[in-house]
Length: 445
Image 1 (cartoon, rainbow, N blue to C red):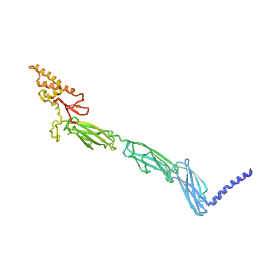
Image 2 (cartoon, rainbow, N blue to C red):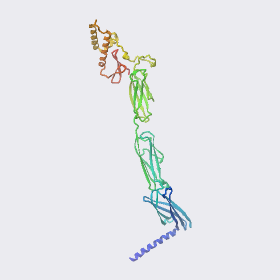
Image 3 (cartoon, rainbow, N blue to C red):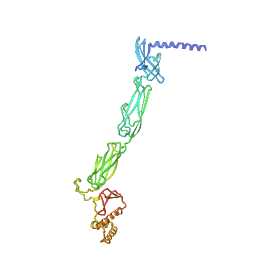
Image 4 (cartoon, helix red, strand yellow):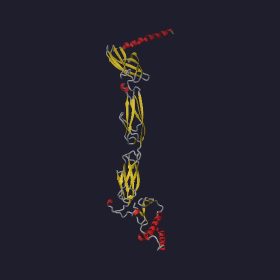
């Protein structure tokens, strides 16, 4: 037992001699070393360490000087390689820039690359440093309107920096996720104006070779363009031909597109169609009397469309021969118009054509009314009775007021400001009541 202990003790005593033998065989020695703490940004606090050393060799050698730096988070080795001839001494330095605030512990190792052995190891001490190099940073900045619609101008700027990676030649790769299309260039702005409508969570991630990393996320919401929103305003509805009239397409206040294109399809009372484009309003002052069907289609830059329609009613002019109405080719199809307050009723029995129309249209009802009034006239002859013309006018007026409702066939009626009563059929066609003739006159449509 005592013999074994003596053997082990002898081995431990010989180990230093073995190290000296390796050192002697390599011929490499650390002649001098020191560490200088420096304030690079002149703020009064050291932020960089410069390790200075001198290496000699008794033979041709390839020497590696390694400085291992330890902080609470990282252990980073720094190298300096030298080639020495026999009997030569060389100076060198390794600069260490602080990548974070805290204590930095340094150790220096001398390597003989020929033998791949460590010839010396020296503790250089611990130093308190402030940050000299900014850690990796990433940024995403959206350049677009507050609300983004498909096709709108949209760019995403990317920002990247890594002072630590650049200083120690340890840059990593930035990865981009969350975009619908592949982005090749790592620094150019990202064009998002062609992206489909959706909410995108765009992420940048980065880690350099020293283990420093950063990440950032940006959310971008792109909405579909709403369909065009507008109304149709008619000025001159139910007014006479030759008076002011316009049909205007008015975009809604919340309409996002200011460059809507409008196309028009107009069907006149003779069922003839005309079209207009690139106009926001139409002049209907000289449109023929009757019902004009107007259809307006608005198209936005995204080719979405909205179509609205309106019926524009124009009445016959008081004087068809008025030269301001232009060259009128055929006004025989126009219905007669009321004279309004200037209308003077003509007794039916004095108008053969009217009497025949009334009897044919009113039948027995007209005969009864006419007989009653005729009897009254005969019985009151010679007394202070009204004139025959006044009596007949009253009879005609009573007949007209009663007959309009009776012969409207349950269809909706409307009396316009000019005193003309209109009736509309389920198919949209219209006719008007001619009180003189006692008949409904149909507009061509």
